[in-house]
Length: 112
Length: 114
Image (cartoon, rainbow over all chains, first blue to last red; front, side):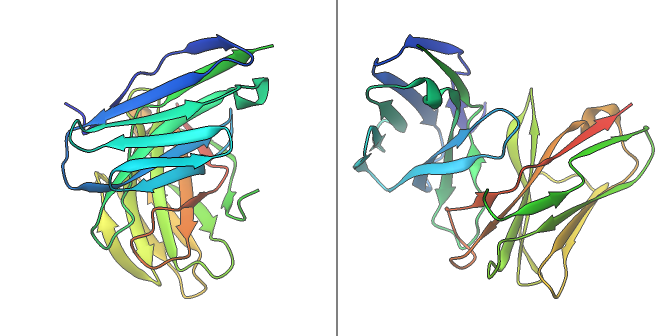
C-alpha cells in the first residue's frame, strides 16, 4: 500500500464548477501538506501548503487537512479552463529533510 | 519559469548505457532534490543534497548516483540503464534550509531507454 493515495481521474467539469480533489495517507508523521499543479510537459509548481490540521484559503483555492482522518482536500471555486492540469498532493514529515511524498496526481479538465 | 534549469531536455539511449543529467538550482538555493516521474510510480523522491552534502535518500537504485558541486549545480548519473528507467527526471531546489516543503521544480529531462 502506498503512503499517499490519490485518485488519478481524469476529472472533467464544466467551467464555473466547484472542483474537489482529495488524498488519503497512512503515515501519521506527516506534518506538512502541499498541493502542486503540473501542466503538461512542465515541472510541478507549488499551489498551496498547510502545516498540520486546518483550512487555508488563497483566492479561488481552499486547502483542508483532517489529520484525524488522514485526509486532505483541495477545492477550486469558479473553475476555469486554465485550471486544466494534473494536481499532485504532497506530504512531508517534520524531519530536517525535504523529502516529499507525492500522490499519483489527479488530471483535471475544465471544459469551456 | 521556476529559475531551475535542467539539461538535456530529452535523452534517448540504449540499455546498458550510462547518462548524466545536469541541474542548476535557482540563484541562492542551497538544496537540490532529484525526483523520478513515471506513469506507474508517479513522482518519487530520489535524493537531496544541501550545500554539497547528501541530506536524504529515497528509493534510489544503486545504479544511480548524484553529487552537488561547489558551484551548487548537481548531476544525476544513471548507469547500466534498463528499459524501466525510462521516465521524466526532475530536479528541484529550495531556499529555506534543509527541510523545505516549498520546492521549485525544473522543466525535467525525459529519458528514453531503448
